[in-house]
Amino acid sequence: MCLFWEGRSEGTHGMQLIYDTIINRSTDSRSIWPSTPTGVVLQPYQFSGFVENGLQTPKLVKVGDWLTWTEAKRIAETGKSVDKRVNHFHHNSVKPKWAVGKVPVKVHRNHTFYSF
Image 1 (cartoon, rainbow, N blue to C red):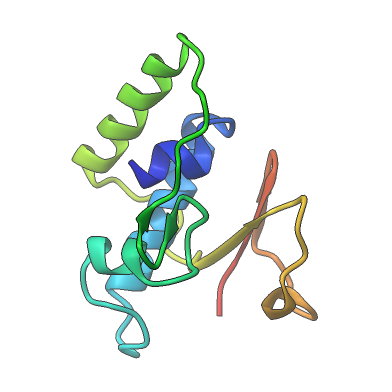
Image 2 (cartoon, rainbow, N blue to C red; image 1 turned 135 degrees about the vertical axis):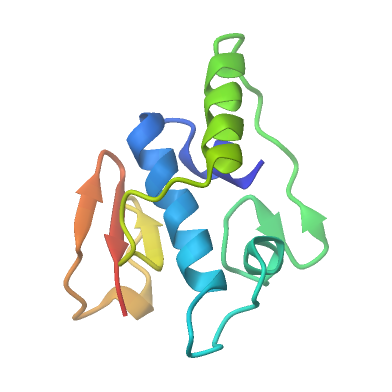
C-alpha cells in the first residue's frame, strides 16, 4: 500500500526506488531503522501515507489507478532491487531540513532520492 500512495504518479521505476528505500532501511547494518519493511513504513513521520495513529484518509483515486496498484503489488512481491544506495527520498514540492546540503543520488520525476 505504501508503494502505491507514495509513488502512484512515478511509474514503475519510481515505485521501485521507493520499494528500495524501504528495503534498504530495513536491512541497514547500522540498526537505525526497524528491521522489517512494515516497521520502516509505520515508523512515525517517515511516509506521507502514514501517521502515528494509522493510515491517513486516502485521496480519491482514478479508475486507472488499479493498474498502478497491481504494479506496486508486483514490485513488492518480486523483491527485486534497482538501487541498493537509496534510503531517503522526498517529493520535489517540499524541501525537508534533513536534505539541506545532501547530494541526491537520483532524481526521478517528482521525487529526489538520497543515500546517507
